[in-house]
Image (cartoon, rainbow, N blue to C red; front, side, top):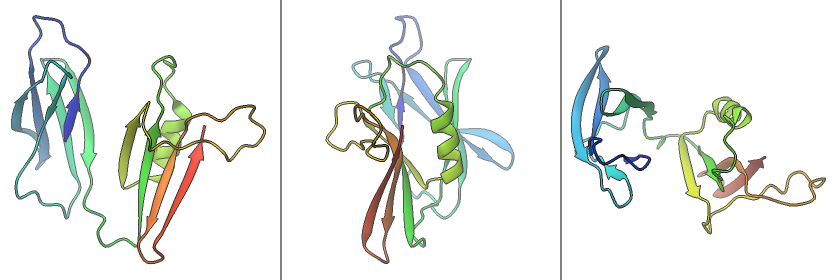
Length: 155
């Protein structure tokens, strides 16, 4: 897991803590130093049990935290769904409620962020009334049985 932070002030800690929810309690399992060149760090756990969902949180300092869910490996599913978040400009500061609601509705197995200038970009061709096509958000479906890949996009 990669933890990406905003640039930090000189006196802020360069340590991020990974905690897992086990038996109803948060337990710290790793601490990592942040690379101040890219403001990120990498967590890796050997012998991970990928057969179950696990709640996690990343903590920085005393107040900052990010909670999420590490999902079980969808190896037994015929179709694997990836939520694709691309071309996400920092010029738009709204909470992106529609995107969040769509992701919750489709409940993808993975979330994928391709960045802004990347060759793996989804474009919103679904609405021909638009005067321009822009990078979008959506789903990528991998159907193992049919050996197909389907891209679904929304603005």
